[in-house]
Length: 113
Length: 112
Image 1 (tube, rainbow over the protein chains, first blue to last red):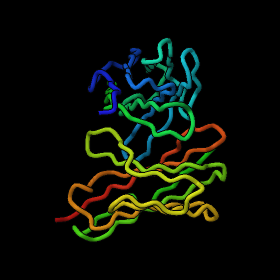
Image 2 (tube, one colour):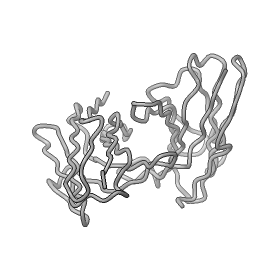
Image 3 (cartoon, rainbow over the protein chains, first blue to last red):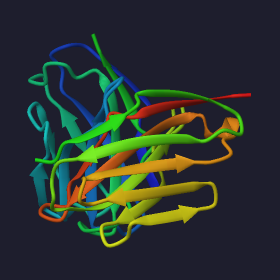
Image 4 (tube, rainbow over the protein chains, first blue to last red):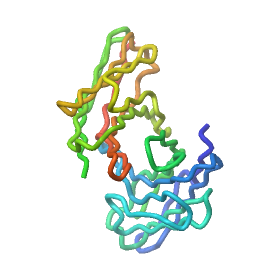
């Protein structure tokens, strides 16, 4: 089912804590992406990476950080600086950064109280 | 940056009828327009896409049209079935930075 996994499916954290969401793909894709989905809104791009050891901010990067040390992995850290972190987070990957289909992972629902 | 608007936000149709979802975009550099379907609690999945050098594309009961001059594109679903009930997202990709910008989504309900 796409070869992209995200864990965990549900995550609960207390306010003020950093939390890291996992995203792994075995599709041999160069490009990976993190999106945030809120009710009634489309997907908004947080960060993306075209290649290992390189990544760029998306439209809503404040309060988030990423790393891309391996081609297969693109973890997202939601820091305590993110003002409204409760959301559904989706990871995606594509062959490269161009006109390629993006394949999505199953998502992680993060709840911060 | 790119701004994609999608209408309507909800759509209820009788089984067998057609459903049409419309999107507009702002960046004339956008050249790729995918449509994703997301069932409740599931991941978005690509159902059809169109590139800027094509005006229309069809895949069985699904078709997409693109009007580059007017900067709008539409999804058409014919002979709707209950399994078509889902949230549909349009998106536009700019040839400048290859980022995908999504519409807010349309919740389609097919009444049996």
